[in-house]
Image (cartoon, rainbow, N blue to C red):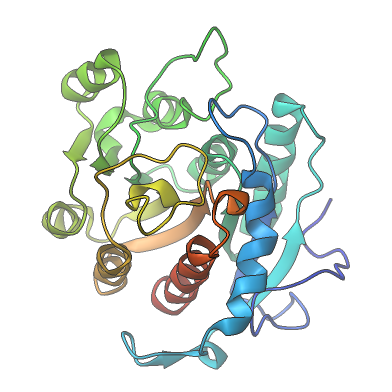
Length: 290
């Protein structure tokens, strides 16, 4: 599937009618084939779109309006149910098309494994790539129960692909002992539990570099985002994640793509998780798409 093919489903608020003039492409990756606890994140992208209808188009944080950003919601990639390897190939090819057109890819997940083929595609275009990873979980396993394609492995794969010293993780509060040992010994940066302050300290070191940002909604405490497959107590607030998004927006790093993953709306009848996620997407569009 191409990102410029016709799509008749729900779209994120104020999506432009065509892709030609868009600076950013929103796309969904409805995949949860490898999750280790609760499935359901394949329903995240469309529910985030639905929740966006309740947003104001203006951001008082950034003093910008969505009419100032040209973006096109291309809908969901039609991933083959249960086929992880083929799904990852399709995501890789899809993102390559977006990059070839010089547009900013903004992906909605889906489980966190979907970030891996995106990182591969972006690294091909930007060999000086760094990654900002905001998450409750380290995602540094080599495999999970014998399977290397798992939502617990994408950041380890990224470290091995682009060099661990180019990966910066924030908010981490869960993982096995080997993951934390690897983080300490590999040269990657890991901030445990916190996000905003360590992020602000690291941003000057990434000045001028192309950076891909991947955000797992479970970095939030379950009190703020119960709608996720592997909720982890002790997380940050929605306000803190907004502050992190704005810190990146106000820095001089070059954000070349982003994703927001692991929204599993069925576990949150209040819809506070998708409401928060849609607001984060708005702030990403207004702050990171130049």
